[in-house]
Length: 360
Image (cartoon, rainbow, N blue to C red; front, side):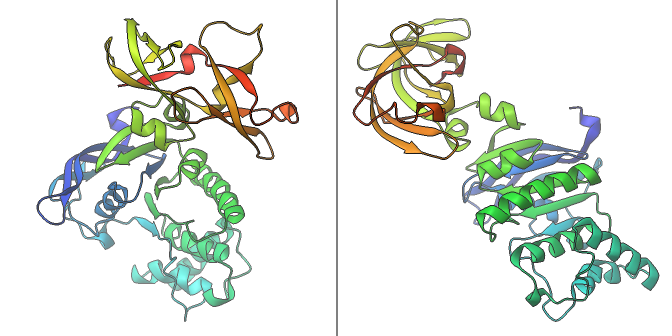
């Protein structure tokens, strides 16, 4: 991605509320035109503060935010022309759906015919064309969410900012709305910046995800790369399920290294942070990358384990396995193993070296 395609640029942005603790520290971030970027992280990681600084509701303590190369750090929110969608929807209860959606247009003093045409288009966009005369109190949570989204899109903003907008919905509706939002984004080509603490939501919807922790972006990447090649321990543990083994580096060769577990088992994996021989490390692998093998399976990168529990997940089985001297590890296996695996059973596990990532 090239700099010339950046819609928004954060340069050296910092934010502190008390003069001591930096909530956001030295943030350098480019948001590309037309992309769906999610800011993902636990509570207090700086993601919402970053969104609020972009919206103009918070001011950076230092640094600069630019839009199309022009500084907007001191531009008030209403002059930034961004759409906003919050978790609580913020709809006016005494106004109809159509009037709620029209509100940003009336503030901008558009003519009546223009307003009606744009409201109709926005309602159709979120598949609520027949509900303009209803009031928010007559709508379900999912419908209210669509109205809030239509209101954010009605004035053709170049950027739509969303702060946990699906957080109040039940699981099934939330998953449905994720797909709808993604399809809408693809159709409109507007730039979306989306704050969430839900990793599956971020992976489902985004083109890129920025993972925040303690005010710093730990990794920003396309979703598949973020999941398959986390750049450090935090990203590996926060994004997706993760099985972890403690080990010590025995030797390094190029991008790989060999490690020894407490019971003497030797494994080879990708040496992500250039750990040196003798260092204590964490070995990380996705549960679906581990396979249960019999005596004739691969001989390298094998370890013995005992099944502690077999959990049925509908589309797969989850084995909770004990490995000598290690935290419990999780293994995902296909449903055809149903009935063949039991608690207490001894098994051999194989971890492909390219999927074992070693972090210092």
